[in-house]
Image (cartoon, rainbow, N blue to C red; front, side, top):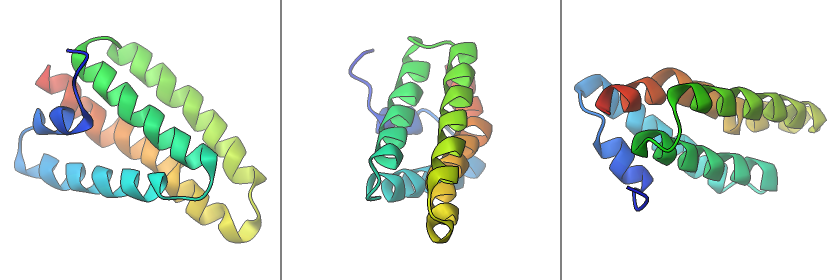
Length: 113
């Protein structure tokens, strides 16, 4: 299953409530990947890969949660290092994206396994 894409992962999630969450995740990832900060782009790319690995079984739910927790610590440090005017946007593109994925998307991916 190494050839999975993020779209394959999202397609495996069923239900009306999940469709809004999937659309929101795609928008958040797109925004993060389009950001000028390398950390934000890297965070989004890693998150996509972790979801693919979770879906394919290469990463367990426990490992996924640990990856998210570690990345969230790094994201908080990144946000605090930003100028006050850019902190909110940096937080939206990193911490909020990680939390949203852990709370809304990952459980649906795990249920779809």
